[in-house]
Image 1 (cartoon, rainbow, N blue to C red):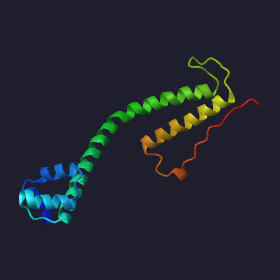
Image 2 (image 1 turned 90 degrees about the vertical axis):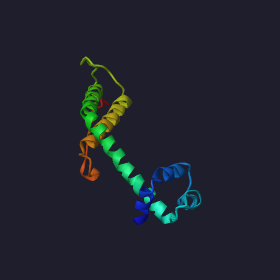
Image 3 (image 1 turned 45 degrees about the vertical axis):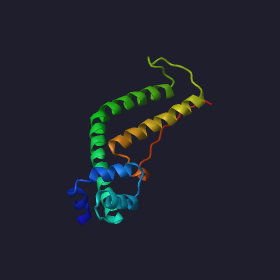
Image 4 (image 1 turned 120 degrees about the vertical axis):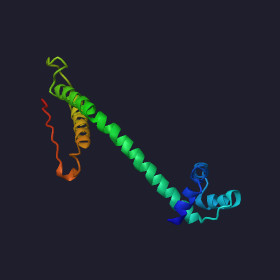
Length: 145
């Protein structure tokens, strides 16, 4: 951990990140630090420091993404509910006005498949799909044969 603070305390973190961004590995970065900056540091220390920076940035990014998702989930769920209702009406042979229509069996099957996907997506957003084996969704198909 002393090497972590060494990179930070010498203010060479951005330089190390730039070299890593250019595709240089930890060994090459350690060699460049020695020859260009006069800093003796092991490649293991460079690697450890880079991993910690990546982890920190990943956590920050994850928090930003989660905040964005949290803000949009209610709207997304409303949209999915609307799609689900439209598909279910079509599956039952009704158009968007509720008037009876005739659809092929293959179209009904397609509606059922899409309904399942919409329901799965809603469950995923709600966190209710943690244990997939505990969840069984059945949508019946009324087929005139």
